[in-house]
Length: 280
Image (cartoon, rainbow, N blue to C red):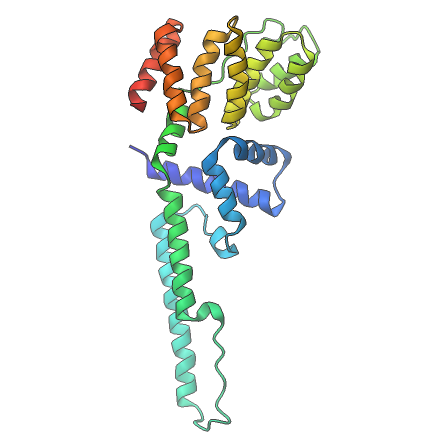
C-alpha cells in the first residue's frame, strides 16, 4: 500500500526542485540532478514538461500542505472573491441610478465565474495528479528505494583514510565514499575513459547513476559489465535489474531478476526472489 503522505512529500520536493531549475535559481548539484532525472525518470520528465506550461499560480500550489488544505484554501479564496464581487455590485446598486453617472464596474478576467471555475478545476486536477499519479511507477520507485543500496567501495587502493593513488579514479571513489554520488558521476566517466580498470570504474559509475536517479544511463553501464562476464558481472546483473525498475521497464526487470534468482550468487538470488514476489 502506497503511503500517500510520503508520496506527496516526494512530489512536492520534486516540484520545488523543478521550480528552482526553471527559474534559474538552482545550484550546480540541483541542476545536474534535474538533468539526470530528465534522462532516466519518465514521471519526473512529465512533471517537468507540465510545469513549463503551468500558470504561475498553479506552480506555486506545490507547497508542502496536504491535499485537503489545498482544496480548503481554494474554496475559501473563491468564496472571498465571490463576496468581493457581490459587495461591489451592492455598492453600484445603491448608488446613483443615473446611467451616465453610474460607476463602471470592471471585473478582471480571473474574477469572472467561468474563469474561476476553470482555474479551480485545473488546480484540483493538478493536485490530484500529484497525489494519485500512476501507481505502478510509484510502486516501482518504492521498491527501488527498499532494495537499492549503492555497492560498497571494494577497491583496496581507495579505501580507508589513506589513499595510495591520486589519479582520477581515486578522486571518484573518494567522492563516492562520501555518498556524493551525483558529484562522482563526471569523475567516474573520466576514469572509465582514462583508467586501466575499465570494468570496475564502469560498475561504480552505474551505481552512481542509479543513486542519482538516472536509470537509463545505469542500464548502459551495468549491461557493459554483465556482458563482459567476469569480475563483478554477477553483482552487476542485480543492479541492472534495479536499473530497469528505476526506468519503469518492469518486464526487463523481471526477466533479469529471474536470471539472478536462478543463476546468481546466493545472496543476490535470495534478494531477487523476494523482489520478484513483490513485483508479481
